[in-house]
Length: 179
Image (tube, rainbow, N blue to C red):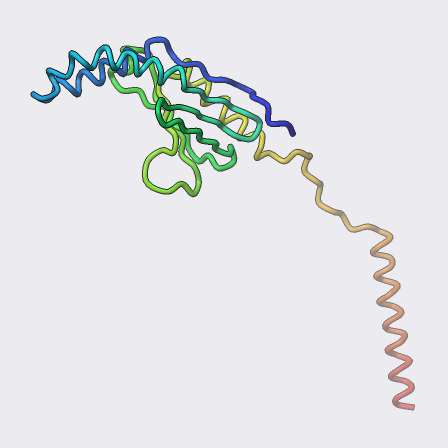
């Protein structure tokens, strides 16, 4: 089957602001970081916009494809049948922004934690549901279950006749050896 895109995720417009404010919170926790806040907002604003523009998450018939990055661009392709868990996480700051973090874990992945972590997908619960539904479609058999085979009367009759023939042959052999 052709591997066309079934669903394309979109990212929230306020995702950049969430990252900017999260970064500012980390900078303000240290004495060295406070002066860096002046650089963080213009550079962070530019960087987050570029990063978000390079992000994509696509659901195809067989896999989930996630692309992201500014300098180093990565593409993760996860076969749907290898997905073991998709978690939705929403911290207090994320709730203020109406954002979710979607994590994807797979069978056989190395290391702890999620293989893929995406923040800011618009209607993340719906995207998660679509991925899991498509995964379920792939694992269901494409044909109806075959009913259990009932003994065939013709086959049963043939086996009965063969057993009777073997008994006659056995009787003739016994008679020939004794006689």
